[in-house]
Image 1 (cartoon, rainbow, N blue to C red):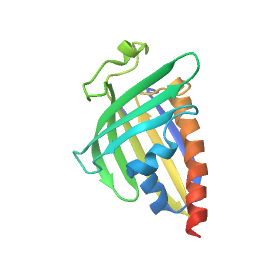
Image 2 (cartoon, helix red, strand yellow):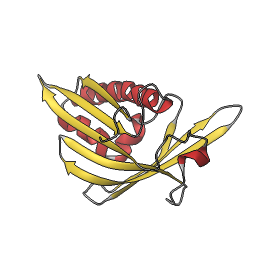
Image 3 (cartoon, one colour):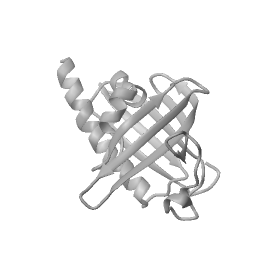
Image 4 (cartoon, one colour):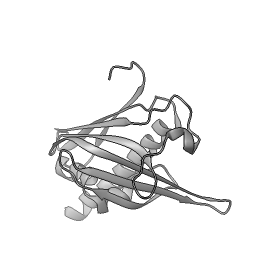
Length: 165
């Protein structure tokens, strides 16, 4: 994190075991259920969760006025189950070809490649998550989207944990 303040850090405690929260980050079927801000769905989540493995995710929104689809790709840099996951993230097209954030209407300050760092730890049967997204600034739409996604993750994790009980 060499660029000071060019990142968002979000810390949450989920009322779910660490192995479940890890699966929510690494199982594509489960990931699709919570990822993205409110109003967005995740039609595609392809994840080869190993160091050097790739990921490709799409988010879509349908409204009476318009539809929108955004694609992201990246490479896993660290995979240490169940407590640390690090991957890069870039905007791309449906084929996985990188595109600039500016071509999607993002400000010039948004970098072509960002990095997501997820650290999980167990605290009294719950899971503490610290997520840092380098390249997404606090107070931006990207940061707000993460917060909304983590609300969805919390509710989904709770529903899955209730089913396991």
